Amino acid sequence: MMATTHALWGMLLALPVLVLAPEHAPTAVAAGLVGGLVPDFDLYAGHRKTFHYPVYASTATVPAVAAALVSPTTTTVALAVGLAAAALHAVTDAAGGGLELRPWQGRSERAVYSHYHGHWIRPRRWVRYDGAPEDLALAGVAAVPLIIVADGPVTTFAAAMLAVSAVYVLLRKPLATLAASLAGRAPRPIAPYLPERYRET
Image (cartoon, rainbow, N blue to C red; front, side):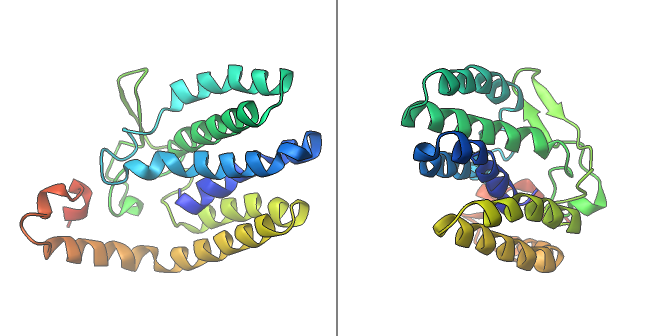
């Protein structure tokens, strides 16, 4: 799924905090945003493996949420929401397409790596690829409650993320062609550092 979709769903996880402990809402929203985005920091270094932990992050979320419920502080709330967002990101990547430049072709059987199991989890393709119309729909499902319930910067940011998502959906397939073209023209010293999927034909 799109990074914006992951970010919006991470932020959505903060809504219960907004209701139950509004004093911690800014921390929770920020933690959800960061937790939703951080796994994709491995985009050019073992994407969907290096920073993706579908089992371990999910397991760690349980005691973190318990700690936040028992003793809600800035630290416990941030840890709980951030871990939950990172876990949700990794788990939902398995619902999407495979790890390839053009995932709508359905050639890759690698969705996300499970460090616990020691192998790649296959893509379910319920969301056919990042930037698919159904991906935008999921971004909208997360953005609308944030826009309605939250206020100020959160509302503006959620609306902006949804707008960026819509533009990306329109450009997703042309961007794949552009990426492959640029990768083919990359200077020799840089070429070895580009992901293998960028050299797909």
